[in-house]
Length: 504
Image (cartoon, rainbow, N blue to C red; front, side, top):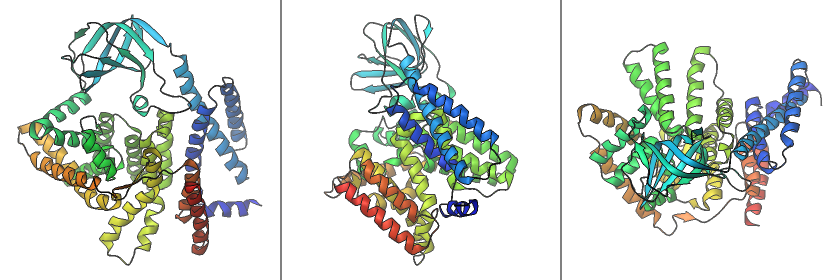
């Protein structure tokens, strides 16, 4: 095959270098866990990495596209393996147990029954700094607050956050590397929360003062992504109904947040050079307040890419922007690719930019607004159902209908709560009861739906079935540019293979 034929073939699959790098990095990170016990592998990968860099630099003007593509895949896969092995090496190099005088600053408190958990940062044992954060369990509920410093005699033990069998996403997202338990009395010193912590605390207090405890927990989770205050039965109802993604700060939240403040600053007649930096600063700080989860970081990076594209006068490539966001997330936290939030966040956006437009064109006989509402929801369901079923073991039967009706309502409640929280904090005017009452109605309706016999279907996609399912969706998307009949035949074959893999 000559170069021109290869270029034409790459055009058929709509080749995106950043997407190839992103996917190859994920493969490399997955391999790093499987091969983590081979210590000398890191040296081998580093050698391959260095050799390939030198060859790419020396042959930067080479015209062989096939050679370039192969080297990009090898380079990105090796880089992903190095990132993964480095994280595993850091974890394994931590001392298993420290014993002595433990001291740390409380950044978050979680109370369950008669047990309290303090998530501590800036932790030391006998004056020696500890890598990462520490979760401290206490069998006594004490008068402690975020920002306080605790000191006690005890020990901390290393947590197995990463191993060959599973990833503890909660510990991974919060950078928790050690656990401890208070067995004796403790000394504590009052401290002050940071600005981001103060915003969360004051918002929660305002919600509790104006709503019932249940409504306040749901509102708080919508704003900051923390579901600890929601009752298990309520959370189950939202999950079974397929609307629990409203509690994960992701593209929906960041998009609404960005759009609202962009519109507000436009109405204030701010120039583009003033408006865009202000909006981006607010979005980045909001992401920081919400804990910088993979889904929020991905959405923030994509917003930054879309905003900066205005200045360079270039057409925005959505798939490349999504892939760039994924690469940045993996650089920050390589093993975030194993979390449910990472998978659902990227798959949901991928569905919109891959088959969302295809579905919209297919539904062109429908009214404009109806198809613009239905097409994205159906596209997201098509791509996220296998992931949801794989992790949770069921598929929500009411998810498309619930999302179609509730997404607009949730969007309005989200912005309304932000505005009314600011008003309440400034002048004490309580306008939050309206959203609280509406959330109460939504909770009751979803609770009844989740109790219906056919609310969920117990089915679990295996990794084997997904290996056929997602290529079938890719073939059907706009990124595989062949004739319609060829698409239908290929997609049908792959979906059939996926079905047999699922039932066998």
